[in-house]
Amino acid sequence: MATASARHILVETEEVCEDLKQQIEGGGDFAAVAQEFSACPSGKSGGDLGTFSKGQMVKEFDDVVFSDELNKVHGPVKTQFGYHLIEITARSE
Image (cartoon, rainbow, N blue to C red; front, side, top):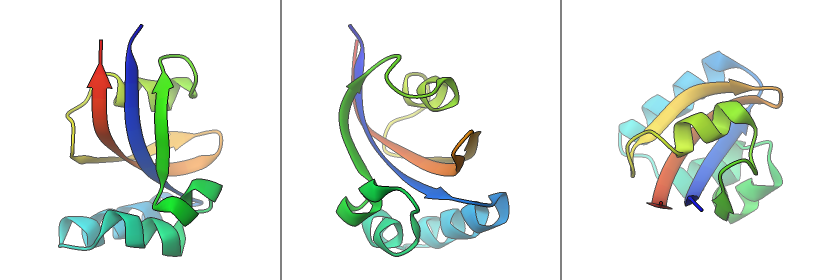
């Protein structure tokens, strides 16, 4: 079964999400940004979600994690929870 490891930042608006993405792409530390801004409890641990299987996360999240490029910041990704920046740190088939 396919598994992946990822970290994310969850915010309320697409605008905030875009701003944080620019900060990270400009050299900001993903984990530090997650700790400061993420609305998800995982923000306390730098946004780390650990390892999970396909189907454990909402579809929009899974679609990115199980198909997009590793070690790159993806997003904004809109889900029922808000807007996410997602960094896929590992994946296995």
